Length: 243
Length: 105
Image (cartoon, rainbow over all chains, first blue to last red; front, top):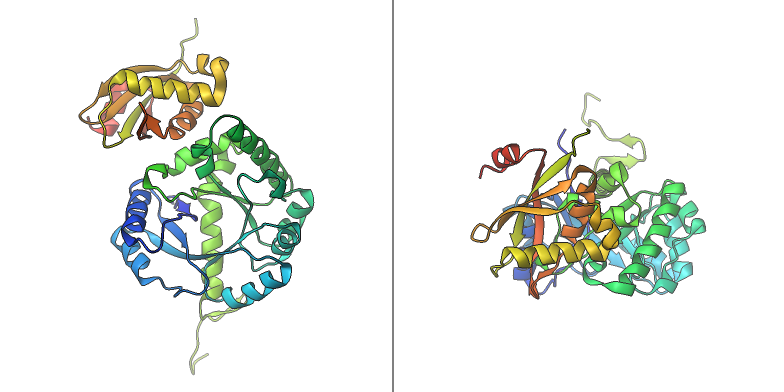
């Protein structure tokens, strides 16, 4: 079966549909089968404009929301509001209590950490252990690897290498997304996988980070959001008088 | 004597601006050196086989163990001669003949 590659973090300006269209077109040209564009939690989750663009370029549109709560309570409130509306929920962890709450909550799909502020990258073994017992994946944006240079890139690679090693030890899936807003910075899935080798994600793990892991999240959540879903492991197969 | 195993990479230079072959190779070497240093660059066996500026198509040769290194380095290129550009790997092959067949050029 042919692999489907997914970029779960394209980051266009939502007020500029032309830019979003260029970005999605580029992703489609480079071989992505599914793309996720984060939309604010209060906007129409259907995002008709983006969906149409994705349909035109034959790419699967995945709805995504990036939550940036200031406290664990705010995170729980946001999750209650958003979980049934969006296919992917990513939490941008700005503080340790939020990171811990996000890691242990089964409604969170992706854990994202500030890329440059190394003191606020809270993905340590405690965080990984919590994430491994829930469903959360570690998300890494490749954009900074392309835009940073010199000492900044060295520091970023070093911290990513440590986090990936921790994630691998605790069997936490890693998703590598592009995180770009400029079409010129979109890279092919194989190129993203090659870049992942710089922080210790090699071979099958690197390919899984751009294909299997994103697809698994989308499939799992679509199943849960479908009207036939009852509970984990139970779904409505048929209904009617003859059942 | 054991044969040196090589791989040929077909590249597409994604940019609105035209570049000369030396500008392209400078960008590639700089990217390899930034990511892997001079020691790493010396292990790639990188050389330009052909470049068609009009088609924005190039073929480079690398050692078979260095394919992923070169692929990562090419992905990290964001500009060539200070102009925004990206380099994508179209195909990888063991012979130039097969590469040309695969890319139909």
